[in-house]
Each structure stands twice: as structure tokens, then as C-alpha cells.
Image (tube, rainbow, N blue to C red; front, side, top):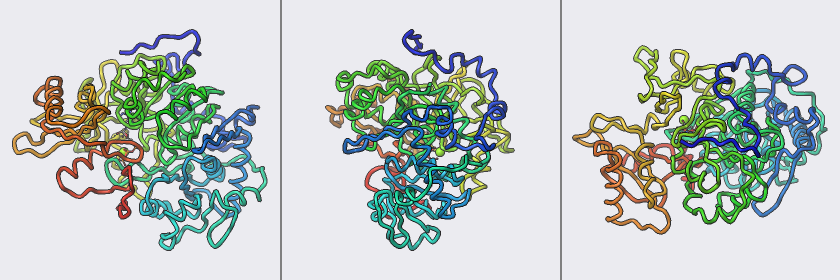
Length: 586
Ligand code: ATP
Ligand code: MG
């Protein structure tokens, strides 16, 4: 357990008394008390930027953009409010109606942030597409969203959209962020913006109006399009304040790309709704660059992911020590289980333990977390957000659910009714309905809860295996292997076995300086066996240079499994690396 030692030089945590807040807080009251926009609407973009301008903080920096070639650009809250008003006016001129989807396919460029806010202001639905996708996953998502407008760059358009435009009959307008020319079906984003006025009445969207369409990561199968509404901003703002401890003037960096839900909920909305300065790095991961950004920008709050943390661990602690990271107040992680090794490494090298947070595209905002004011149990996802009732349940055949006892393994469920809960999967009502039973949202993740209310991730429903009568989740086995000094990453799968039902096989990536060998394989298997006991110890171990991951950085165990068993690989549209040209979603 890592105790949180109060530091007199640091502000008191925003959520200073977790238990008191948990007892007192209700979403109903928070939503009823929320003051929306001046004409009675509730709108994410208004809450994120315009509110601050009205409050007199228009000159504060909202976005600090760091280009991949060393460029820098600051946008104040007032500038962002003005530019997004202009873009909302442009969209209105194009005839975009509330509820319509507007897609963007771009890297982390300033236009992406202007687009997101402009789309929300006009009442349309913001749908980001990850820029590293290949043409086919992009076509499928554009077709599913039925967008009439796509914002992108000339290069991405030429490479990934142009050839397929004929198959996208809905797509009328492509706005290029880096072109001044207009030709058939192509328009200049900046020329459109410049033709508009800065002024617009405050948005009129209502709490239940659609705002965001996010496709899931595709870790377990074909990505699903989750829909979120404007009221979600109440959860974004509160989780930003309570979990990330954000306050006006903080320098905040979320490393997730806005092509994924984290990069929007916590890479745009939550920090702006809390008045922070958002650092946006256009470039891809590079350990030295990252440390340099943390140091130079004096980042206070840093939200990243286990894959990135593991990559930093691989580079080693020496590089960290060359940098002054004393501005950091809180570091947090999301997306995958955070191994205890990662939490402790943060404490030892950054001087801050990583705070794990759990949530999903579907939940829209952080649901379970480690808070600044509470002790951290390394390896635990933490405790439910005040206002969230979480439980470990088993779904019965009559579609009711049984709550399980502390320590028992079951499905992680959340009592329905928080503002950022998804309101549907696009065009898949049946699948949406299947996520609910007995007043609970069933997450598809398996976990346990200890007697003190801390939740522990076990694995996804699909990744858990049964061997000789035991149910085993990958997290436990992978954690043990990661305790070995040679191992940087491990992925577990089940392999059918005549006697045991399934046996455990692990795939392992090694730290620099270690080479695969028979001796090391034996050593690792022995190491795991001593710690896990023979019943749950892996029987087979294979070395891989890297484990296959989704583009949002999650280990794709289903791909390890499919390759091992020689079965079809399934949807590969979100697989990291060179995109497979012919993979689709269906
Ligand atoms: P798909 O639903 O398409 O298979 P996905 O579930 O990976 O993809 P996301 O919504 O991006 O798509 O990811 C949410 C999932 O990520 C969670 O259900 C959980 O399995 C995992 N996850 C997120 N945060 C954590 C965490 N802190 N600890 C363990 N797992 C986490
Ligand atoms: Mg999922």
C-alpha cells in the first residue's frame, strides 16, 4: 500500500474527503443544479471554453500546441471560443443540422480542437477517426456515421479517402485544413472560417442531445460506435476535478490521441471544463522528447497509459534523472491494467505513484480510480467515483443479477444513470440492450472487490480461461512475469488441452540487454510456477520482440490466441503497425 503523504507545498486535493463525498453526492442533484448556457441549453463546448471567457479568464491559455517540427502555438480560451464560433457558423452555412455526424481525420493539430468545439456548438455530433487507420477502416467508419462533412489534411485525403469517395454517397464536403483552394467537393477549412463572423448566440443544445460518437478500440472484436450526449460534460468536469485534481491554471498533458475516447473526454473536454492549459504534442512517443516536454512545460498533471509507462520503463530511470520533473503533482493511467511494477516505478523515478483509473468508451468518463487523498494499493484500479455504485455480479439465466461477496470473481457492473453513460451503439439497439440487466450496466470486464471497497481487474470476459477447474485472468499471471527483471511485457492466452480443458501459454517481450534462450524460458516458467503454484502456472512460453497491440495501446490477446490456434484473425482494423489494407470491420 502506498500512503499519500500530505505535502504542505501542494494544494489540498480537490476531493479531500472521499467517504463524505461518496455519502453526500447524487448525480440527480448535480445535474439539477448545473447552470448551463445563458439561453437555457447545456452544451459541452460552452462549458469547456465560453464559460471561462464570460468569467473573465478569456486570456488564459487553453491550448499549447507543440508541433512535430518544433513549432509552438498558443490559443487562449477567448481565441478558441471565437474560432469555434466561426467554425460553427461555417457548418451552419453548409446546412449541417443538429444530430448530424461530422467526422475528422487528422493528427493532433490545432484545427482538430477548433473542429470538435465548433461541431458541438452547432449541435452536430463530433466523430473523430484515428489518423493512422488505413483506408478501409476509415471508409467503414465514415459510411457507418453517414457524415456529410469530413475535416482532414490533403495528405490524409489523398492517401486514405480519395479512392473510396465514390463509395461514400453521403460525404458531400471535405474540408482541408492545409489548403486554400476549393475544387469539386473539396473546400478550404481556413477560407470557410475566415468568411464567417466571430459571433453566434450561445448554443441551445439540450442535455440529452447527441454530442459524440466514439468507436471502441476493437480489442475484443469489431469496434462499436458508442453515442454520448451533452450532459456527459458534467461527468467530465467532475472527474477532471476529483480524479485528475485539475484546477484553473494547471498545465495538463493527456498523451492519448483524440481518435480514442480518452483523447476527447480527457484530452479536450475535462481539462478545458476545469480551466486548465492543455498541452498537445503532435509527435509520436519518444521517451526523451516526453521527459523534455514534462520538464520544459512544467506539466502539473499527466494522464497516460500502461503501454507508454512500460516503454518508459524500458528506457530506464537514468534518462528521467536528467530532467527536473518537480512540477508534477499527479500522474495517472488508463486503458489497460496497470501492473504494480508501473505504480512503484512512478514513485521511485518520477517521485509520484501512477494513479490507475478504469473506464470504457461506453462509460464516457472515469468510473473507478485512485484519488490523491486515498492510499493506493498497487495493482488495484481504486474505488468508485462518488455517485457511482459499482459491484461485482453474476448474470443469471433469467437476466437478473446476483451481487457477489468481497474477493469473489465476477463481472464488473455499474448501477445505471450517470450523465456520461453511452446512450446507444450506433445502429445496434439489440447489442446496446444486452449490456444491461436488472438496473445494472455490465461492463464485460471481470474483477474482484476487496473488503475495503478497492476493485481489482482480473481480465476481460473473453480473455479469462478455465484450466483444471480454475478460472484465471491474464492480469495476475502477466503481473508475476513482469516481476522478473528480464520481462517488459507479457500476454497470456488459453490453449485447448485434453486433460486440463485449457493450459496457459504466455508470450513475453524482453527488456534491452536480454536475449531469448531456452535457459531463460525455463527460468521464467520456473519463476512463474514458484509464485503462482502449479495449477495456474503457464506451461508454455514464447518470446516475441513486441506483443500485438491495438492502436490505442492495448495488448490484443485475441490475436495471440488466433495465431496460436490457426483460426481466422478477425477484425484487424485497429491493430497497431502497418495497416492491413483489406481488413474491414464486418
Ligand atoms: P472493444 O470494446 O472494441 O473490444 P476496448 O474495450 O478495448 O475495445 P475501450 O473502450 O477503449 O475499448 O477500452 C475499455 C477497456 O479497456 C475496458 O473494458 C478494460 O478492459 C480496459 N481498461 C481500461 N482501463 C483499465 C484499467 N485501469 N485497468 C484494466 N483494464 C482497463
Ligand atoms: Mg470494450
